Length: 232
Image 1 (cartoon, rainbow, N blue to C red):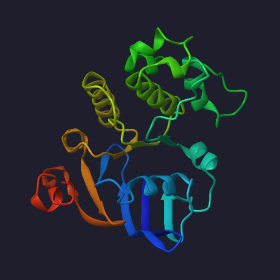
Image 2 (image 1 turned 135 degrees about the vertical axis):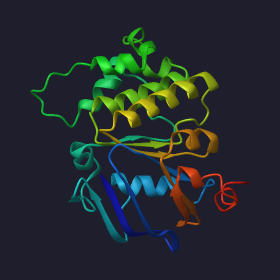
Image 3 (image 1 turned 180 degrees about the vertical axis):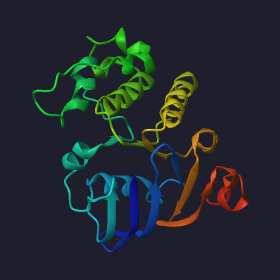
Image 4 (image 1 turned 45 degrees about the horizontal axis):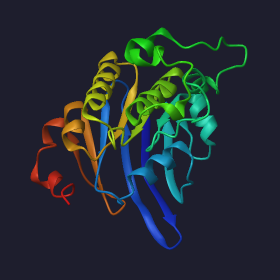
């Protein structure tokens, strides 16, 4: 579903991404691991077109998307749950979720799919509340619901457990597991919480100083080679 080949990116004179190659298949969860400041969010923003590439290629569902705008990538089926949630504080919960339909044809019915409430029952009771009035954990669920409303082929999570209470982390993990097991969506999970990622990932990639330093399947995530790049 997603194929990244030898991408490089610079911030001024700093070489922030160094020849990164990776792929994410339909029906699997790929974990992107690494300490703070190693380039994880920069990579995700490049995938979504928020930041431009210096070189390399990004293919999504067989199409070269390296020069497409973020909204064009979203229209193709890429969804992004950003770090910090970035919900619309003054819009209602219902309006926030329906923003996920922004790339769909205007004549398409704009209504929240029942699946959203199956995954996040609490949101059904909060549709008229402003997004900014929700707790951090509820806002994270709202951000995921907004992404899923777009019916994506690929969903990218950037640190979904950051600053979230344990009970909501369990709910988020349950949803990601259900999406993975459904088999019709690719998941790229950027995460610092190692145990959370290990429970969900089929494969993993570890970044350090903007380059891939380790990768493999889920059975290899506990290796010392991986852990040395994650410990502070």
